[in-house]
Length: 266
Image 1: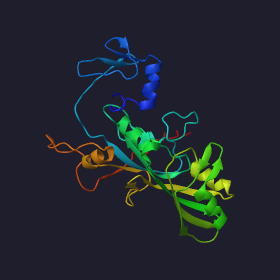
Image 2: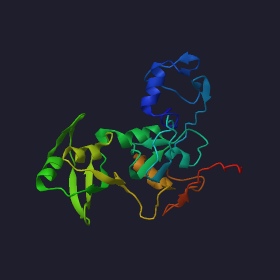
Image 3: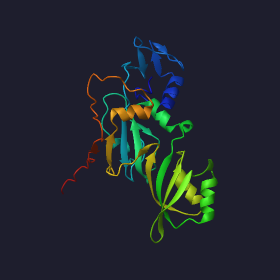
Image 4: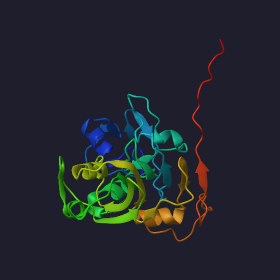
């Protein structure tokens, strides 16, 4: 329930329950405990308003540029993707997977922790597709290694597909797909066969492709009908109010430029 309302991810909520930070009707919550409309739930002493009304999760598509971190807290103070997103009245945005600091492309966000878990969990086998630019070109032996399986520090890894996308000079493009999202997995795989990735962009996550009109630093929200379908939820028979997200082609949103203090004149 807490994950569905975007209070935290399922993993985070599990940790909070184990740490005794969640109360139900004045008692410490236990794993698997059920709650209903008449229950009072508190997280870290703060009451959580419960609304047991079926609703579609909100889902954002964001074109992450290079030079942003997928985290709210960074000791180095680097720019965060969360600085770019619209403000939620309730809950918070949860990133579906991650992209490293120097990787660009499609990044999904939702306010529904259950949906986020569904989209990330290995059992659902959602394919990720990347456009990769290499310094150099693969030979047949390297292609065989990358598609049959190559041993990394954290286990065996392989691409489910690898296609030549052309290029000129030392820069050569490839399209690769895989079903995992381990840390720097694509880069480490190419490093293991002796090639360096000079540019990496995620272009698809599951059935969702990075729209060509969604430029870097911009986001768009899926219409409610598409969000229901992505979550595997039944659509309501009738809507009492029109969908504020509209229908058909989603709108693009430019993010606000970051504030940079002006230097005082001497």
